[in-house]
Image 1 (cartoon, rainbow, N blue to C red):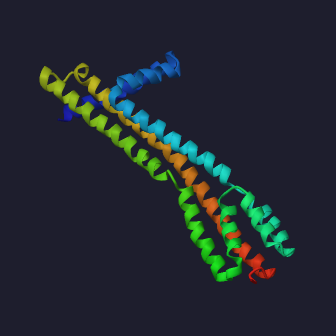
Image 2 (image 1 turned 60 degrees about the vertical axis):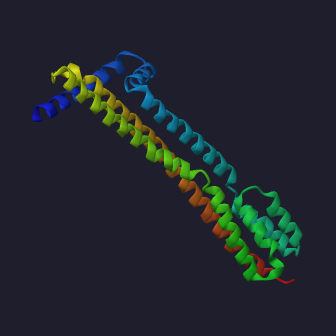
Image 3 (image 1 turned 45 degrees about the vertical axis):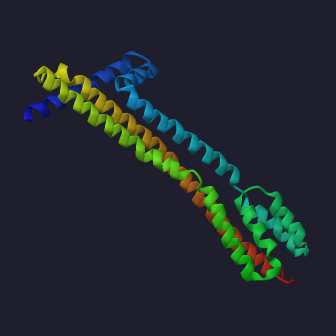
Length: 237
């Protein structure tokens, strides 16, 4: 058994050395293509699908969140100007014509102004929860691909090791040439799965941070709106 682990370690070093030489001698695309094929394309293709779908969800969320970002200070200033003039309908129109979840939440608050401050706050909280859910849409799928990609890589690792031991059993020899193929599959599938998970995890954290920023601005704007409405006596029926 000790001899087997020494052999596996030696093969691992040889595999990485060979990879470095290949990267120096040929283009990066050809090396990546070669590793993809050598790593058992059946599992590598599934991991690649996880990467493609995960990137699609990430790009969609990033574009949506960037479009959802609103200059809340400018929006509140415009609404405040209308409320100072006693133009509630004008304030509603400003909020309604502005894109983004923050403007939608403020519009709901203005729409319940005649019902009193408690009704305004309740409407803001209720509709804010709806907007929060819309902002987080698709994150569960990104999390799923982050979890599945390394699992598939590890599955390929296990299968590769099984293949290596099957060859040892069939041939009856523990030479590196016999088990190199199975170990190479094991290493490549693991690396590819981890790389996919790392890429998606970085994008996922960026998206979550973006959502947190939008939600914080939404909450600040909602509090400021209630204060502006109270200052201008906008709660009067």
